[in-house]
Picture 1 (tube, rainbow, N blue to C red):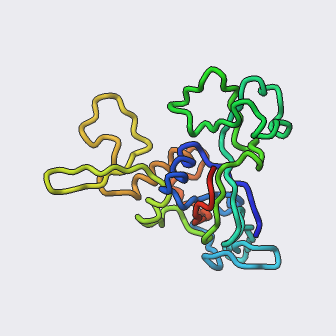
Picture 2 (cartoon, one colour):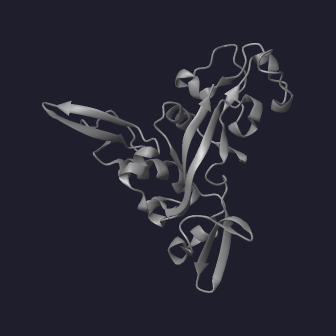
Length: 237
């Protein structure tokens, strides 16, 4: 089994720990394909062991491109990188030279656990997730499946598996699910239900995707291809 690092935002970390998120979509290595996503087609939806490695081949006319799977294959492990900080007394040290967590004053703090981002006075500078050493990671995942899919083809079940935020409202004898609109800006004048999609997890996921990827040129309207990784929580500390 191989072990590979993967970055997640604080909100995703919380969803994983609460077992609300078990799927992620990533664009790694697909830059050329997503310049004209509707012109390219994968030879197979699932990765395959080619001579070049484990991945997917895309075809566009006479052109063929091999894209390596960025986070391994089913059965591989992923360890999560997330934003963190230490006591202020360690701010001068590089992450690789920090003491062992058992001897470190106040240990490691993860920003996902800090309410509203309001750090205690003893908490030092925020360290980006990319610099989190393996020995401090608290979340291990197991890869269940890997496939290639255009983001727009997501199902309702998969949208929910992506960890979108939902609530259930009950009116008289009827219950209705509402899913967060991640592009909604609350100006204090919205009617009831403003900022939520009624019974529509796919629209909620599309708003989340665009909030992250639209400015990068990979918005929903472009129909980008993405890796789809299903995973399960193996252990957390």
